[in-house]
Amino acid sequence: MAKWYFEDFELGQRIALPPIRVSPEEIVAFAREYDPQPMHIDPEAAARGHFGGLIASGWHTAALMMRSLATWFREAEVQSLGSPGVKEMRWLTPLRPDVGYAGHFEVRELRRAASRPMGIVGQSTVFADPAGTEAFRVAGIGFFACRPEARA
Amino acid sequence: MAKWYFEDFELGQRIALPPIRVSPEEIVAFAREYDPQPMHIDPEAAARGHFGGLIASGWHTAALMMRSLATWFREAEVQSLGSPGVKEMRWLTPLRPDVGYAGHFEVRELRRAASRPMGIVGQSTVFADPAGTEAFRVAGIGFFACRPEARA
Image (cartoon, rainbow over all chains, first blue to last red; front, side):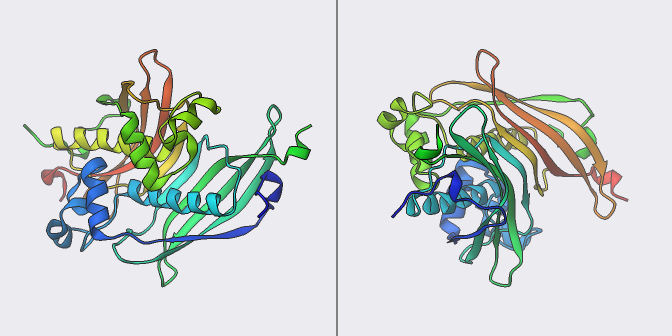
């Protein structure tokens, strides 16, 4: 299979990502390490609280998005060179255990870097539950290598 | 000790956070799970690559920031009610293993919610290496409970 370079992105392109699904045990394990608040680590307290049950830490949701992106990068041999950051990130509805969230990556901006053989891709990555309700939305920026023949 | 409510935040207030420090083993373990790219999981490939050594996944850096924030929340009994998202997040320089990064939380915006007994705090959270070079900067938004006597 051919590698995926900056030149393979197109404005408006929408790429389906591997879905996110997380178990209650994973939610608790991540949160014990990084975000030990009751709604993430204590199923009983979470059931009594504002969210009516255990929900993933927003930073766990973000990490699960990265897992999905990294799986696509590996499977499609996407020549990612990392990221300088994200423009905006929204936790719209809670990520709940044992639910599959479908995702996509949409290309919003394409710009060739002046100083290095790479391009900058502005993108919107979204995950939604089976009813189509968005749970998580990120406007991110990524760096991707140019095709070798385009590097001169 | 008194609990920390929305009313305890002040514009411009700067709160020191527990420092971030991560081992190479933790960098690799997180990245194997969520962001298995060579610069995060393979010390030899990382040494030969653009960054000259192993660096933490940006999402690991974000999770470590949350650990630091959650430690402050617990120690100061900060009445956090979660977050709708972040406005901007920048990975400015790589987070490297076995380096201590000092952090602070700076209050940038304070707004009382109209519909619930809580306030919205716009903040900037920054971590910098021992030379003062910023590694990570987030402009975030948080919800915090109002004092019981202010809820009427």
